Amino acid sequence: MKRICVNCGSNPGSSPVYMKVAEELGSVLAKRNIGLVYGGADVGLMGKVADTVLQAGGTVVGVIPKSFAHKVSHRGLTELHVVDSMHDRKAMMFELSDGFIALPGGYGTIEEVTELLTWSQLGLSSKPCGIINVSGYFNSLLSFFDFAVKEGFIKQEHRDMLLEDISPEGILNKINDYNVPSVEKWLLFSD
Image (tube, rainbow, N blue to C red; front, side, top):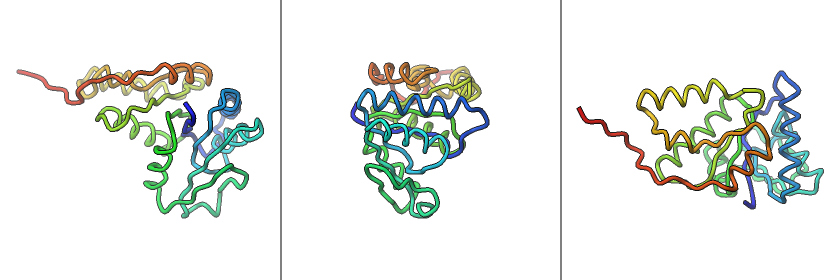
């Protein structure tokens, strides 16, 4: 792993533990000499991860849409790419990254994670995708995915594509050991 994309909130969240884990993730990435790719902002969990990697001497590449680059762009990054749209942002972050980690966040974070899982499910990506389940933040989402398996909308092998851990070290170890399953996406049932 040369570069990991971190998807996370542009807000700090209501508990200090979110910023603490964002800082831990930044420290671990820098310690392992893994570059950070992220959404390019200087606020919230995003800014905390980036600042921590930079303070430890690591490299940080930001990708931000021009529509709000003037408001929240981080000015001290190794590289900052200003792109035309959110679609361009996600495509560039995907191309620049060897794997993906999500910290807590809102709609954007959830959308990015589920899009990456969809690409993996369809065989369009073989890059690992994991979450750090800080204080059970993702429990409801994970329960929904388990329910979708039970109801026949997701195969268990595809559900297992989402790696989970409660710590930065743990999720990076799982990402490092990840092997993409070769499973047909389509669930076929007979009468």
